Every structure is written in C-alpha cells, then in structure tokens.
Length: 82
Image (cartoon, rainbow, N blue to C red; front, side, top):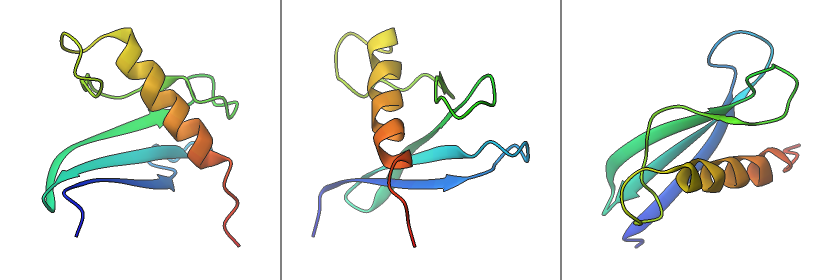
C-alpha cells in the first residue's frame, strides 16, 4: 500500500467549457490537500493554480510550487482516455 499518493482528475469545475485538473494529495490514505490547475484565458493552456500549496518542501509556498503543479497537470491533460 502506498504511503504517499497523488490522484489526478479532470473536470469542468467552473462550467466554462475549459476543464480544470484536480490534484489530490494523500498521506497514508488521508487527504492532505487539494489543488486545481486551470487555464486563465480559457484557451486550454494550464497556467493558474488554486491555493498556495508547498509541494517542493523548499521554504514554504513559492512560484516554483506553481510551476511543478502546472507541469504535472499539463502532462496529465495530454493523456487521452478512451
């Protein structure tokens, strides 16, 4: 069983025809925090992170945390589910 887990899903949370990527972080099956990544211009380019989540463990929340979340969400959004 995993100790740390990241769950990714996509959903149009804002009902604006531009799906967001929902990122959930778990520690020992307990939900620690949730963030979403969206397109600020509604053009499919993911560039906006909700919340201030320190995921790199470096001196609290920084722009680097957003960059990691955007990269993760962008990679996930390229998967085409049939």
